[in-house]
Amino acid sequence: MLIAGSVSLSALLTSPPTHGDDHSAPEAVAASTAPTTNAHETGASVTPLDALKFLQEGNSRFAKGESARPHQSVARREAVAKKQTPFAVIVTCSDSRLTPEFIFDQGIGDLFVVRVAGNTIDKVAMGSIQYAIQHLGSRLIVVMGHERCGAVDAALAGGKLPGDLPSVVAPIKPACDHAHQAGKEGLEFAIRQNVRNMVRKLSHQDPIIKKLVTKEEVQVIGMRYDLESGVASMVIFQ
Picture (cartoon, rainbow, N blue to C red):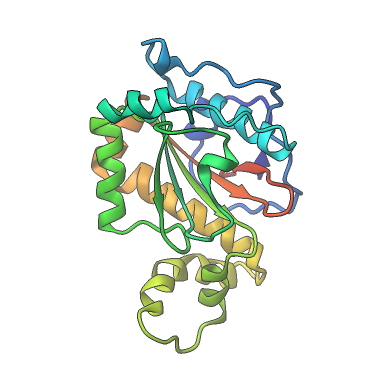
């Protein structure tokens, strides 16, 4: 199911993972007319819910064509040159149409971004995420897939691929296999299932992240980005 707007983050993340699907259209996230002052700017501790709010508000502005483009000044650049404290980690696809700082209307030093075709997570990506939450203070991890993902489409199609492309589609195959077993042959189901698989890998299989999730210091969520509307909607398990 896709959920947007005012939600309980703790409820989303404490629900046991299942293999549910969603056929509803993406909805816009919570509306906002101006960027909220990020808690880490005032020295306050950013919570996972704070981080989600920043992303929701920013995406609402972006989708409406009202981006504020915060934290892009010379002063901001110089300030974060000394120390970075990104409030969220965004794991997403290398697709040229997915730029997290634009999609969530954030600026320099706000997001720690890990990008690879198909938004999958190998050891290098996992280490990068661990670094962000252990040493930089990031409190929310977002795995974001997107509609019409070429990597997922290639994994679904199967067949022989040239060069190192098999390494790209291999970690996506489990999502495609589940789609076939569930009788869901569409690309959209596999895209969402791939997001769910990566969220599960982070929150349940990695001991470092799992420990922080259990202590409610860090949370992991999935999102699906709509290329045409610009909306990033949350993908949850049901």
